[in-house]
Image 1 (spheres, chains in turn blue, yellow):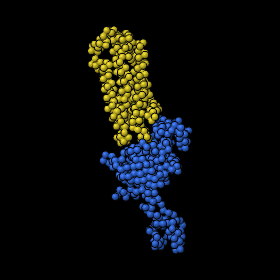
Image 2: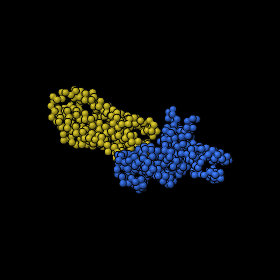
Image 3: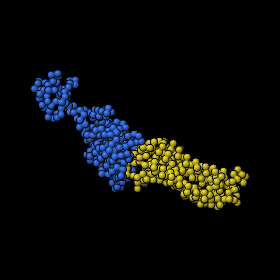
Length: 307
Length: 261
């Protein structure tokens, strides 16, 4: 649905995006992560035909950026970092203006506006000036605006930035619903927990693409898979016993837990547990040790900085 | 259609601003009322009162053979014309400043630019939203002036000046061109500042040439007749073309996002 090939953008002497090559599949939520100034917003702006690439190319839903911009604009929705609503106008008027600019047929326009305002719980406030809305309500309205023409591809730049936890959850749930509808979503966020929960795949960028994969694969790639076991009366002998097993890649003690790195915990865990029980060890808990996406992200960025 | 959507949005938005409403409503009212009041007051001018005016001004053949009240009313009518042309400059400047700087401060330009609207449609919509009220207000004010003045002027010779080709050229052609000038300068200035009042004040430099003309005529240095007015119309058309090109270049998506402050 979205393909970029060596997409590059310079601002005078500053390289904002460097040879970005990636592919976002139809119906997936793709998260773009990166520190401030990493080129996330510039990438989105190039993909939505607001900025021209210095070199390279991008194709959105089969249309080439820079050559078929109007066609692309008809097929995409954009939520910018700031909601950018007309504060003195009503919620209804805001959506009506965009529905007309996106060429939504007049017979569908009202139904569409009502549908989204209803869905987001704003119908009762439709005639109120947007200036009287809370931050969360504004953000919801801005998302409705991006969807009013039923775009196939949605670009969301920091959709939950500055929202309270309740409003952020509402927006996240709504984005998850959009995935069910089969839309392709390109999400830029600093919220790693959000990216972890929502995204099918994640790209980490710092001018160029550092890594792209599913959140799970990113974790496994960096840290491998680990199992933590809480044993009664943990001793050094237990550690030696585990280390002697051929499939154990690494084992160490962390407080009262034994942490074991494995390639295939689904098959190897039962063997490991059996051997420990046979050795008289009492096992209290066994759980997979998951690294947060934040750890993955920080490691990737740190490695990149040291390179 | 999209141009109309932009106009509709602009009017719905900027006319909720009291300052814009005041400018659009009050300015034409004042600029129509003052000339009418002055014409009324000057109905009883004495010959001695004319002595204070520059001889070069009084020596104009247009005023030859006129009685003192006639001459003074005729002179004033000529001056009012330039005064009147402030309407098509001030109104669009205010609307353009609030409309464009408003979009910048609300950060609403980026989502707008992501819609399938062309740069031309957007600029045309914004320009017409600023220009149409100005032209309508100017023409309506002139109509009121022309109708009411019929009952105030001391003679048909004075009234003939109000409906002369010079005035009709000024109102019919120069005022729309002045609105284009104000809108384009408004766009250019608004791209550089983040405060609508600052944009408005900076943009008001466009009235300086008009004021210069006003005082030059008052001092008898120049007399705006039909030929001069025709030259002004032609010159303004050229200036507008140049400024429009600049405004269109500034209004490209790329420039708005990277060069505007």
